[in-house]
Length: 62
Image (cartoon, rainbow, N blue to C red; front, side, top):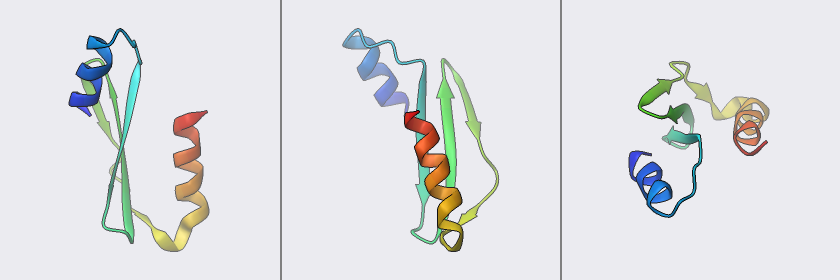
C-alpha cells in the first residue's frame, strides 16, 4: 500500500486513500491508508458472508 502511495505521488496522481485486502480466500480483512495513517479493520469477514465482502469492496470504488 505504501509502494502504491509513493508510485502515485511520483506520477502526480494525488489519491487520498489507498485500500488493501488481506485474505486466505475464506477469511478477509480490510485496510485503509491515508497519508501516514493505516486503519486496519480488526473484524475477520468469512467468505460465507459474500454479500458483505462485496459491499466493502464496492465501497472502495464508490
